Image (cartoon, rainbow, N blue to C red):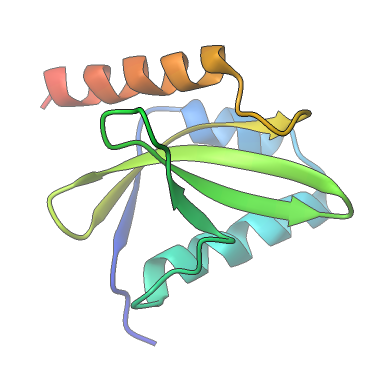
Length: 112
């Protein structure tokens, strides 16, 4: 299948999160990232814009009742810059995680 988007993993933010997960969670994360890369229209179940942010999105992974979120944003039309991830414990995305994602996004653009 042709890729509709290219994933760009910025620094080690994602890798650190990914390596800390179990093999099962890692496999589900990879499967979800493939959806983000390949589908024309990504279902909101897997990819959602965060309202009240400057263009942040979350890649949404769910496995065995556990919820994981990976922050990302677009650079140009088809490059998705992947930042950090975390395991979600509450309904609402913690403010500090959103703030961290905004800082990573700023760091990315300042370094370009």
